[in-house]
Image (cartoon, rainbow, N blue to C red; front, side):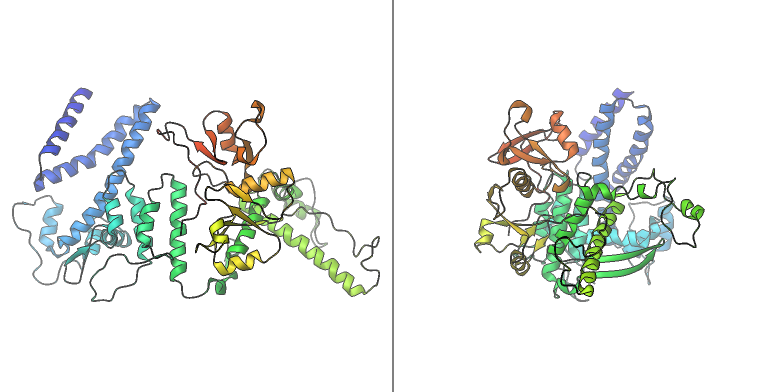
Length: 539
């Protein structure tokens, strides 16, 4: 049975390769066959037990999904290009009943068309939501072909993305998603203007479409997605007329599910401090992170929390939280922020008490300003600003970037460097540490700060673990006699650190910059590479 199917598939492939143009009945017969293949595969694979075959089938099916997306978009284009919405009702009825002779000419409505356009026809013919039908037609405009009011054809709005969309092997869903987002950056044409191609540019004058195509070649998915997001955000900021700081602030959004919702908009420098706070509050290795995880244990069953006099002990005990439920990441971060606010309010309270008392000895040693409050572990955000040597000497036009990856405008950068507790790091072209400012080079502190500032998180491509949660790995293992040195250390998250010691991953130092060699089944070339998810685009 399998031999006959294999021979049939081979014969069909040979016929398709040498048949040239297909007739309409042949084309429709092949499309019907393709639609029936996947259900047959799914049914036949239910008894599959070989994991190797399961992986191979998954890869083949993914390629089928890619081609299905391309064909869907192409069919939406064909429906619009052929004027299918003008077919009369009798023809549509016969087509649905499969009683059509394709050798005869199609019959169109003599006066008012059956449907206003391709979108309405697709929605009715395929039983689609009108928004999904419109999306398919608009996708075809972005990467296949555009039409003016008279039905004349024009090139796709994004010709470079159109070429990538038609290339086998590239994921068409990512290409379409990028095209939709870039379309929002393009100027809106007039009602009677001819459709044009992409013209939006970034701050350096490069077409945003060209930059997007380059970024889509990044092999690692998370890095590719983050860099594309950064590109589009930067393009939006370039096109914005208002200063972004004018919209900074905290906005109350209302109430949802019994909770009050706020929206916080921050500048790059404030956002970096906020990210540092959240990362440290979520880090179990810090006192603040450990404290944030104890949010439920303070209300464990068996212990009655403090409560007003009008609430009975039974009512207070019944309102305690379940101590077995672990605090979520969002809850831990909120607790870390609230701890910081609590400590701040306590310090303000003691300061006001001292000023109100107006005693000369109010600040003298040995006399407390107010009753001592219990110590609450809090995070201490550290802001790192990354500069290349060219940027420091004014030879480059690129923006500064914070340790969390937020880009800073030149004016913000100058203000940040003028403030205290901002640590400027000068990096060479390869990312090696050249200078770490005026900080005292205490060995443990210097090592952590230098390595984390250089790596900015786990160095395994695609990993998003921030530096606060990373462990320092000896590239030349300590157990094998390796020294503790900056050029032989790197940041790894806990999971990837275990992978290195288990032999799944390999780490090598390339001139002081650590690189990772992925498993051969992931990267057959075994090329040393480095996580670039937080890297900036060159100006």
